[in-house]
Length: 168
Ligand code: GSY
View 1 (cartoon, rainbow, N blue to C red):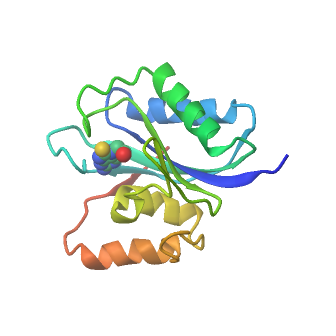
View 2 (view 1 turned 45 degrees about the vertical axis):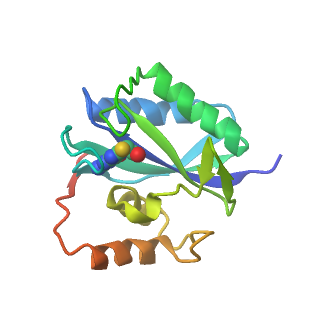
View 3 (view 1 turned 90 degrees about the horizontal axis):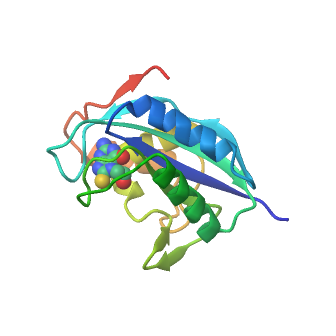
C-alpha cells in the first residue's frame, strides 16, 4: 500500500490543554495506518478569530500514513469527539482541534475538506510549528516553502505576535 506524508496542526484552549494535545498525539500514534514521525515544539498563542477566548496551545505533527485523505479526516474527527470537543460557537474555544494542513502534494477543494488547509498560510500558530518540522516542504498550491511562508507573514505582520514556546 502506498504511504503519504501528511501534517496535522493541533490546538487546544480549554481545560488541561497540554494533556489534550498529548492524548490526541497518542491517539494518532494508535491509529491503524498512521505513524507519527515527528512532533514540533509546543507554543502558547493568542486566539485568532474570536478574540474573547482563552489563549491556545498549538503544535504540529508529521505523519506517514496509508489512510486516504477522507479516512484521515475521519480519524482526526473521531479523536476530537473522543476528547469531548464541544464546539458551541464557530471559531470559539475547544478542548482539541486537529486540522489536516498538508497531505503529500495533494490538492482537494470540497465543501467538507480543503487541502492544503485554506488558511494555514495566514496563521502564525500553524506556520511556526510546521516550519520547525517541515521547513523545506513546498505548499502545493502557493509553490512556496513553509519556511518562506512563515517569513512572509512575519514581514507582513508588523506587530509582535506574542507567541511563547513552552515545555512539553
Ligand atoms: O483552527 C484552529 C483553531 N483556532 C486557533 C488555534 O488553534 N490557535 C489560535 N491561536 N487561534 C485560533 N483560532 C482558531 S479558530
